[in-house]
Length: 610
Image (tube, rainbow, N blue to C red; front, side, top):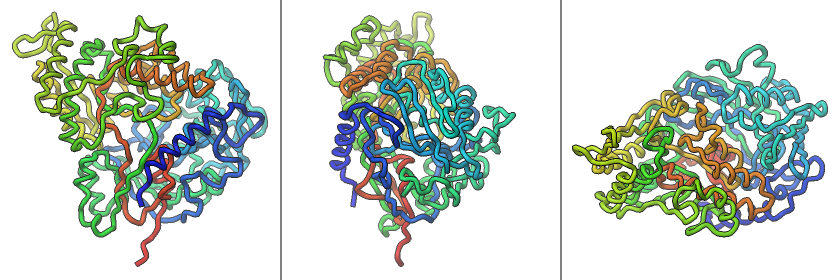
């Protein structure tokens, strides 16, 4: 039985209606908190709706990553850790339900309390909360974690602490954070900071920790073994303190999770076909349709599961670094988008099976609407009309190709834009007034998508060559890529920003000018837009569904008309090929679909009856 996408869509609508229609009132400590309205699950809920509380424990799964690792600390900028690690080994005060737009329930904290304006938030820790060494989680650990990650941690943690006026203990197991600015999301974000053990880092700088310095966690898994660059083995902690919590029932079902590392995606997929891996995720619809007919599938040993979701498309594509000329000129960026022959590339690469992303929030109610901005969206944008790029207010759609390899009309349009930007053809090369040729480099990471993105770039390079532009592609290993991406050492690179049904403060980290030149920032394009930041602030202070939606749609217009990214295809469903003894609650897929919160979190091992 396959998941029902109609059911999933109805679940999204129902969850949004419940969360957004309810009054935003909270009186006294409660078991959960929602961005809008009240949590969908009552205080006595048994488990998350997409988890099986009776799922058996046991079994072992092996998953694969492309690339390498040189760190097991996911909370600092230094090094490259396995991407899954933080989720499996560490916990936060509150935990998410991925069946609601943005709702948190008590995890390390047994309760949360805030005022109507959400100018402060107070948490009370569970008395039984423990680190994996058995020591209790204390208020001192929590305050130290906030302060340390806010100053010495990865940049993604630092912006939050800039908005905290003070943090203080209010009791033996309680603490309060008071905020320095109006931002309704901060009360929720406070519940999502990872909690580390203060004693482990006494007299040491966490930012300088090496591979062997593995942060002590509170999660269901601990690092049991590893070999640098080759594998990490995690085992379920038999003394895990939170195994009977409603938020944890039916989760963390495997006794062991092993992460193997491979040099490229092809080798990893062959390892899966040979039975060495338990599952792989497939991101190419054409490969899914044509490459998964090997004998193990026919014998029923491998199953192919498609997981629907109700998320926005997010943005996947080739981001342009506007810190570098001539990519700081929107006309050049528009020309490069026009020259990217998506229709032909999509047909060649995926058989046309995957639709294109049309905006950052496409596929959801938060997406900008076609045509001119109207109503509240227009009101929000009008104060910035002198700085907005063409199409923001009037309406903007991506340039479309004719589906042929030559794509002549689109290239003519691109050439006209380049001429307006001051570029001309000289001896077959496109040059500026100083005679400097337009040459661009694309930086790609050696990962599971490199063969697909590399093939796209081969087609794109041929199109740009006809415009007199030389495009070269650099493929580097994960460690080199992480360093160069962190330093913005690229003209174009692959970008994936998964966006949620409840966008908030992370949008500043993605698009805010404050982070435009901060090493490690996710603002890869280097955009600086007062309009975008104003729309994010409007989202964070909105008190109604209508105002929040309008502000998000306005932000979507600023981002899309900014021409910062060459969008490619969206991932409308998750595609997982997995061993048949790995199962999940079919029919109870969360509205956020697949992700680490789904596989491996709520799957389990079900031995076949021989």
